[in-house]
Length: 472
Ligand code: BG6
Image 1 (cartoon, helix red, strand yellow):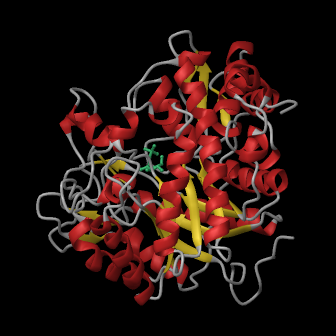
Image 2 (cartoon, helix red, strand yellow):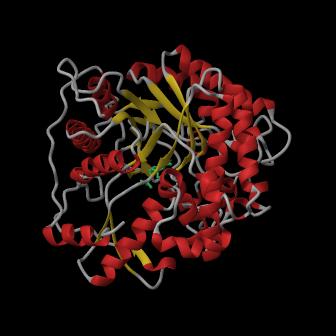
């Protein structure tokens, strides 16, 4: 049963407030202390692989500045910090010998975070696969299950005495769809069968990793972080409704359904059949303790013959609410998603990412050192209010992590998008807390919840959205 917000605090007792990051997006130091290459290092070297030829070589230089960054988190007042371990730092070629120096780095992070009174939440995979494993097929190779289980065991043995929250993967449908079907993300493939294989193998690797974590860290709380997002037809036509249904199955259901319920959604089951061996579904469907949700806003989609699987990203309704963040925002759909997940998968939800990005010219500190990101304050205000509404209606939400503590390397967009509550000057590495940092600090300290503005979908799109999900 979800706990109702109590009268003293607007939020349930023990609610976790945190920030999220990922290794490749902040660490830099790509050639230090024996780190191996990842598929994202390779992606950055490809012409056109990343906007403006940006790379993660230095990023936020967090590898060297982690103490200052964690001190800032302490100032912010968060109770938790979600970071990811870089597999190529720990096993430079993905299998075999451990690189102790790489593992030591995460040991230092864990200790420093704990010393600051912050709980470490570790995600084992945030997209930086060792390049040497990709050369052996990466997630297309069924052996990846064993590779990932071994790597999990290395991290669990080293950090499991202090880390009590582990996520196996981050946004499993993003890195498989964008990396193996669309070629937008590393490793840059456009191959339908590779995409189907990667879905099944990542699911198997998740199950194997959960088993390893359970046996090595029995008192830990485990889960995976999914990008479960409402898929709304951009216009209410039968073709777009079909596209929204297909996108919903690929984007939202391909991983949670087998992991929680033991089967693939109907639209994917046949395509995956050739790769499923007897006993696989039971290996994937392992009990977990929470559902990690990343939410940035609904996806407006359309039918398209240009894209593999027949769906594509479309435009948002005219005059859609946008909180000046550059995309349509419908906080009511966040409320709905939190309620839906509570009902569907029957475990507490952790909002593992929520936040917004703006072009690189935004949020720049003025002469007085003030970085006024009022759009982000507005966005976060609306989304935390929507989360509060969901909790009041019975959603079992136990935590909320902002993406992100500081500006960082935004994958294919390089440094052209800033998501941080702390501005990073990438020339000098100077950090400047933005207005949103101060706003979040106040919220954590008990400031009143913002007003709930439930940006409503146009009625025809609402009906089309519901039709697209019928029976699923
Ligand atoms: C998620 C990722 O996709 O959202 C993060 O887990 C990423 O790594 C963040 O930086 C913002 O990305 P997007 O896709 O909304 O631009």
